Structure formats: structure tokens, C-alpha cells
Amino acid sequence: MNSINISRIDLNLLVVLEALFAERHVGRAAVQLNLTQSAVSHALARLRELFADPLFFRTTGGMAPTERALELEPALREILGKTRQLVSAKENFDPRAANDRVVLGLTDYASVVVMPTLAALFEREAPNLRLVLRVDHPDLSVNHLDTEQLDFSIAPLWSIVPKRIAVAPLFDDQFVLTSRKGHPMLSRRVPLETLKKLGRVVVSSRIDGSSVSEPSLIKAGFPLHPAMVIPHFLAAPFILERTDYIAFMPEKLSRQLSSLAPLQMRPSPISLPNITMALLYHDKRVAASPCLNWVAAAIKRSQSIVANS
Image (cartoon, rainbow, N blue to C red; front, side, top):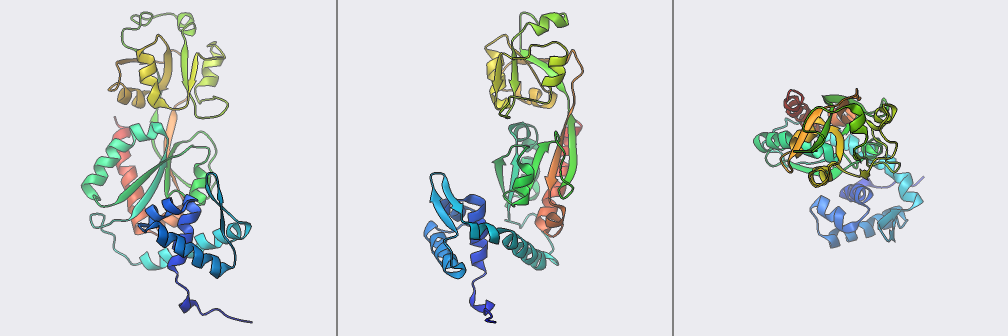
């Protein structure tokens, strides 16, 4: 059996391959690795020669892996994970000196409610750490963590999370009735039946337009079809400001968004489920990395402030 002399293989090529799997684009992989695009293209050519396969082919959206590349990906993740664990096992992590790159996936809700306190903590304690934020959908978080497109995800717990994923609850939020200040129908306490007649804005990033609060609202007699369904919370304050619509939104978020537009909040007239925001990650991967272990603890510390606000 022929053996390969591993000393003749540049193991940095595997890091480039990992970035190409994550980004599906030579230019974006180059940015992630802080390399030139030509350097990544040259590395891809060497990888194709090494594995005797094209590995990626061009599509309208970037690059797609070949069947051979997809076969290699799990082993690649395992090899690089064990290598990082080996190198960092005895490392003393100094957050002030660290310049590691950490990728955090989160929703627009989390970007507004979570990030202010977390950004302040990073500025104080780890000013050179490179935090990359990616828009993430809670339904896709587990897959993005499994494929190491993300190091962490901050998402609402609205579905069952597999046991292989660590879940650290950060804080709870409750829904409140939100409208523009001076709303003609909400200047005083009004009957529930009156509220049901008002146009309702629902925030949902799901294709079917569903949200965690809608089943309870519809069961209480609110119209099955709201006046408007929007894909993210950041548009809500500007829509409410110019209309007589109402929205049932998380309280912590509504308070933050009230700095963008004049909003008023009232307790929900019916019982609605709370939202639990949680930090999701692969426990073994984080435990093996002093940097990721510190970041996980930092996120939990920063959100204790949000939990008590």
C-alpha cells in the first residue's frame, strides 16, 4: 500500500478548504482568512490537485461543493477541530491580547436587545477580538452550528434542540401591546373587543407567517389574518408611528425601539407565551477552545444585565 508523506502537504490548505465550505465564495473566503483572492484561488488549485477532484463548481450564487467535497467535509471538521484542541489545550487565554475571529448568529431581535451590552463588554475586555455577526434564522441555527458556519447562535427557544447542542438560557421576555403614542383608540383602557377590530402587525420570518404569539391571539378571537406581516422587527416602529395599527411585541425590544419612534406599551390583555432567549453552541468545541470558552462566559455575563432590566 502506498503511503503519503504528510510532511510534504501544506496543512494550511485544509484551513482554506474549511473557509471555502463556510463561505461558498473565493472572495469571501479570502476576507475571512485575511488573504488575497489570488492566494485562495491558488490554494484551491493545489487542493484540487491533492484530492484529484474539482471540489467546487461555479453557480449563480457562488460555488457549490462536488460530491467528493461533501464526503470530505465531516472528516475535515474533525481533523481541524482536534488540531485546534491539541494546540490550545495548554494555552492561557488573555482576552485583551486575543485577535481571534468569532462568528455569532442572531436574529434582528437579538441584535437590538443583546448586542448593546455585549459590544460594551467586548470593547472593555477584549478590544481586539473580531466578532462577526451573521443574520441567522432559529430554524437553521443547529445546522449552522453543526457545519461550523457559526461558533454560537443566540436564538429564541421555540423548538426542540438536539442533545448534541448545548443550550444556555439567557433571559425571558414577555409580549406587550405596542402602538404609536397618542393612538386615538388607546388613550384610555378599552374593551378587548375594540382591540380585536384594530389592524394588527405581525412579525414573522417564517414562510407561513406564523409567530409564537399568533395562536393565542387567534384563540382569543383576534382576526385570523392580520393587517400586515413583516419579516423583521426593525420596521415595526416606523410602521406603527404612521398608522393606527397595533402589534404584540417583546417588551425589552419595544423599549429599545421606542428610541427610534414614539411608541407606547401596555400589558397584553390576554395571556401570551414568554420568549426565552438562549445561547446555543457545541459544548465540546467550545470547551476545547480557550477563546470560545471565554466568549461563551462573556455572553452569559453580559446578558445577566439584560435579564434584570
